[in-house]
Amino acid sequence: MGEWTPEAGAAIDLCSDWAHEVSEAIPCDIYLFGSAIYQDGDQFDAQLSDLDIVVKFHQDIEATDRAKRIDQLRGYKMMLELRMVPHLHRTNCEDAGVSVVPITSLELLANIHKSKSRHFFTRNVFLDLLTEEESISIPTAGTCSIQDEARQALEYAQDVRNHFLAISANRTGGLSPFDGPDPLPKALARTAAQLVPEIEAGGWYDTRYGLEYIWDELTRRQSESTELNQLHRKISIRRGGRGHRQPLSDFDQLLLAEILHDRASSFPLEPMATWEIRFGGTTLSAGERERLLEELRLLVPDAEVLGVFEGSIVVRLRSSKRSFSTMGRLLDLQILPRFFKVEKVDLLDIENGERIAGFSAHGIVERIAERISDWRPQSHEKSAEIEGSLARWLLDWLGNDDQLSAATLAREALIGEFDRPLRADILLQFPQFGGDQRVVIELVRVRHRRDFFSQLGRAQRLGVPTILVLVGEVDQLARLQSDIRALSAVDANIRVVPVALDNG
Image (cartoon, rainbow, N blue to C red; front, side, top):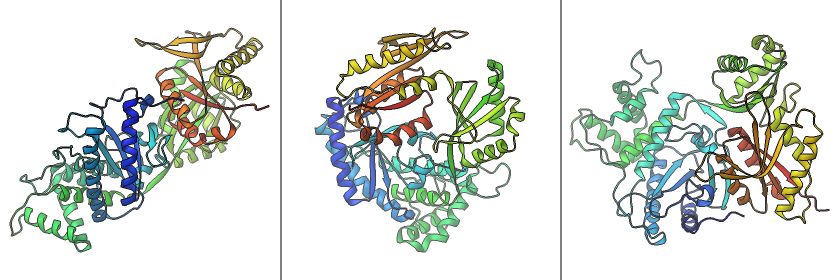
């Protein structure tokens, strides 16, 4: 099993103890990600690396209570900053060593992150600090999409929270009070302007619209809490009303961002789907493949291409379920083959395994994966013996397959353009027009969940199609099924094949 480096292990223990304290006071899930857990913490530096934490609130509450909860979380976050210094022997107390991103259920569903990445909560590996289990993505992440106008407002609100919490061990940092000539920070007003319905041409970024939008919302909600009432009065004076003009405190700015969050949260969500489309018939040229991809993008503009495979050509996509359903109806009407000018089109729902038409295995990688799934290693064999058994199993099959008999198999092969090339358990090379196709097979003996995640980061660095063969007991493999499904939706370059041990 992969083990954390000593520095990473110390950081994880520190964060785990902290997370249990926080969860007793604030109903939430808490996850660690980044260098502390990536590749067993090999890149984590106790002096220089940040601890990256996501706090996902259990309850969906309104702006004032959410701002108060984040303010409460700040006290715990400062406690963690102070504990880092002796625990990790950290000498820098001026810069924040912990980055905490609090999120709501909606932000997780729509994959909203302050970095504007639309894959943040699905393509990262996270360590649940309360259960001490790793997972690919956080459960429910990226299952829905939301309009871009709402997305940018939610990203802004999340960024404000992160800055509000960014206080170092010596109590410096965080959000500075705002006392500019404008009633509100321009970034806030510009973000709010994009939520204004039926705005006139050219006014999408007009801060005046944003100011009025926020002001109307504050006026409507001022009686909901003392904090909103006081903020309404403060901004009234900053807009030119009578009274003593005061700067907007860090909490004021946080509360304004949470008001913006509430408004953006009212936009509708749309479910997402991961699916594949296969274009069948004669072997397609490179030019024909590009034509098909371009026409596919035109037909399904909200889709993201995750990967392209041979056989004749298979494309894996992520789009709204509405778009996938539309493609299914077009297929039923036999329109798709004529639209794409191919003999046959098949569709497959990756997440549910539903074949819309006769969707067969595609390409070399899938054929190898299907072959490996029939292999049964013995539980009494050691890892080297299991690897040798798999190599012999594949060689026997390749030698009897007319299409693949020219393939070569090498064990312990060096892969990658690195100063220190990575060693692959098995490398298969298939002669093809224009150059050999390479497929790496990595064998993982699964005794603990960590074995899978320890090997996954390494496999992703190889940069070539990789089959990750997980060998273990049936119950151990079953506990990884959700992670295997999550990986298939975000990384088309890695195919996971669980293989149960034959216990005789």
